Image 1 (tube, rainbow, N blue to C red):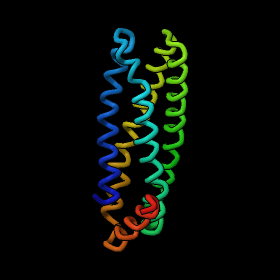
Image 2 (image 1 turned 90 degrees about the vertical axis):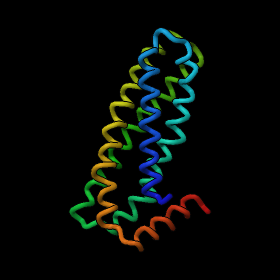
Image 3 (image 1 turned 180 degrees about the vertical axis):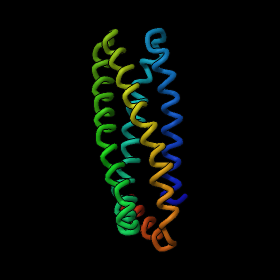
Image 4 (image 1 turned 45 degrees about the vertical axis):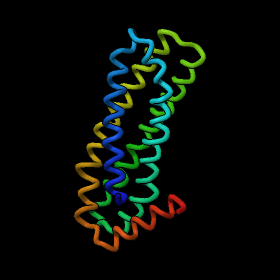
Length: 160
């Protein structure tokens, strides 16, 4: 699997997790099971989504900056700028999960619902923008040697 396919697969995983999260939000006040999963969701955000953003910013975007014409590079800053508030929302979610761990209350459940909705509302259009605007630029402008550079950068990132 090449790096672009890995990033797109990450979007699919995020969409699946968002579907699960959406279901959890809907059952928030009636099902104690939902509260047991707060930490699993928090771990998912930390391991998968945060890592996905790092992969884009450290591996993909530097290669894209060397390949894309100047007029097409605005999307890189736009995507990077979107990462920051999404990550802040993840951090808020993690803090909420910690508060819930110490004291579960109606307020912590309301925080969970609010935080979950904020993440969903940010992540879905962000992933769609990457799928519709960012990755098509890779397919349009990358040549075989660019994919090779991307792969080498990816392996350096993994320290393989």
